[in-house]
Image 1 (cartoon, rainbow, N blue to C red):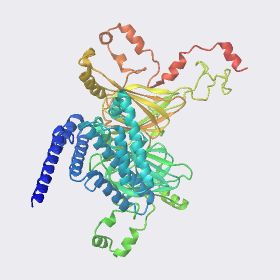
Image 2 (cartoon, rainbow, N blue to C red):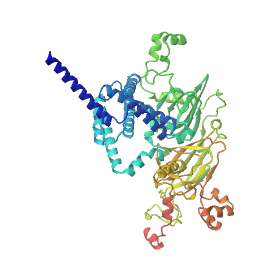
Image 3 (tube, one colour):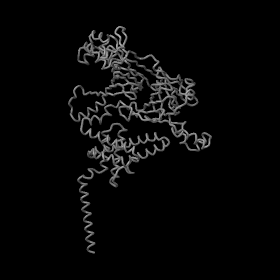
Image 4 (spheres, rainbow, N blue to C red):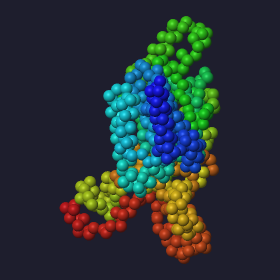
Length: 635
C-alpha cells in the first residue's frame, strides 16, 4: 500500500513539474508571442492600415481568418492541409466543380484544376506572408521545405507534384534574391502599385478554348488597382476564331461593342422575333445589346478572325456571365438546370427527348463548320429589319472614315456617337492608331545601311525600309479614360501619375522627414509600359502620356475611350501645343524666363500629333555623311 502511495505521489510531482515547465515556456514566449485572438486582431488592424480599397481589405481579412483557423487547428491537432483548413476546403470544392463541369473534356478539366491550384497557392502564400509580418521572419529554407511537404500531401499525380515543386523553387529563389537586395525587394513589392495601368497577356483568362479558337477575358480592372475605379464596370475580351470556326450561340448580361481587328466573317444577332446577320470586315464596329443572342462564323479558309470587345455589365457591376441556351454538355446549356417538369411543360416534349437534345453537344463552345455551312450562315448577311432596340444600319467601318490625322508617320481614325449611334448611348468613342513605317527621303540624313541598292539618289524616290519609330506627341484627355488594346507591333507608353508619387512620398517622408519638400511639394511618377500584341494599357483622364513605336515596327492599337462626351484632347507638344496659347506674360511668370525663349522651345517642333520618336531625333542629330562618301556608296 505504501509503495502504491509513493508511486502516485511521484507521478503527481512529475506532472506538476511538467506543467510548470510548459507554462514557463509559454510565459517566455517560446511557444507563441501572443494569444491567437490577439494576433487575429493585430492582423485585421494591419489590413485596415496597409490595404487600400474594399476588395483588397476583404481579401486580407480572409487571410487573417484562415491563419487564425489554422493556428486553432494546430493547437488541437498538429499538421497542415487537413480537413479544417479553409483554403484547402475551397481548393477541394474548386476541383470538384472542375470535375463536374468538365467531366467530358479532359483538357478543359486540367485547365480548370490548374486555376484552382494557382488560387490555392496564392492563398497559402498570402497566409505565410501575414505570418511573417505579424510574428517573426521565417527562414527561406524552412519555408521551402514546408512548401515541398505541402506539395507531396496535396498533389494528385506526378504532373501536379512537379508543377507544385517548381512553384516552391521559384518562390524560394525570389525570397533569397529579395533578402540579398533590399532595394530590389522594395521595387518588386510595389511593382503593382507603380504600374497599375498595364496588363500583359497573362492578365487574360480563358472563357472558352478549343482547338478551333478561344475567347479570353481581361481581369477586372479594380482587381489590379483602386486607381482604376472609374472603369471598374467595364471589361475587355478578345475573340479569336480559326478558319471556318463557329462560335456557339449565347447571350450576355452586358452590352458589348465589337471591333474587328483581323479577318472577315459574319455575325448574327437575335432579340425577340427579330434577327440580323451582318458581314464582318477589318475595321468594323458593331454593338450587341445585353440579352441579344449572338453567334458568329469565320468565313475565311486561311486567315483567323480576331475581334476585340468592350463589355459594360448591366446586372452586377464589373461582372458578366455567359448564358448558353443552344448547347449540351459542353458548352453547358442552362436549360437542364430547370426542373424536369418545367422543361416538359415548356417544350411540350417528353423528358427523354429533351435529355438527348441538351446532352448531345460535347465539342466545346467553338467548333469547325463545313464550307456549305459557312456559306449558309453568311448568305443573308447585312439583311434584317427593324431592330427592337432601335434602328440598325449594320456595322460602321472605322478605317473607311477619313482619318482624323494622317502623315507619313501614321494615321489616326476616330468614331463617336455622330458616326455610329450606339456609341452615343454608351458615351463611348472608338479610335484606331497606326504608327507606320517612316520612309527616308534623299534630303534626310542617311542611315548606316545607306548602301542599300533599293535607294536611288537620282530618282528622288524614298527608301522602303523602316528606319525609326514614331510617337504620338504628349497629350492628355480632359474626361475620357482610354483603354488601349495592342493589335500589332511593339513600343511603350509613358504616363505621368501623381497618385503613385504621393504614396512614394509618404514612405520617403517617414524615413527622411521633410527634406526635399521645396517647390510646393508636388511630385509626379513616370510609369512606363512596354506594350506588344495582346497587351492592354490604360490612360486615365488628365494624366499626360506619350506612345512610342519601337524601331523597325509598326504599332497598331485600338482604343475604347470611356466618357467621350465633352472630352477635350490637349496636346502638350507640336504645332498644336496648347501651351502656345498662353499669354506672353503668363509664359514669363510661369517659367520665370523671357517669353521669347519659352516660345522658341514651344515652336521648335514643326510636326503635330504623330512626330519623330527619340531614336529618329537622335539619328537626325548625327553629322551628315560627306557627299563624296555618298556617291562612292552607289558606284
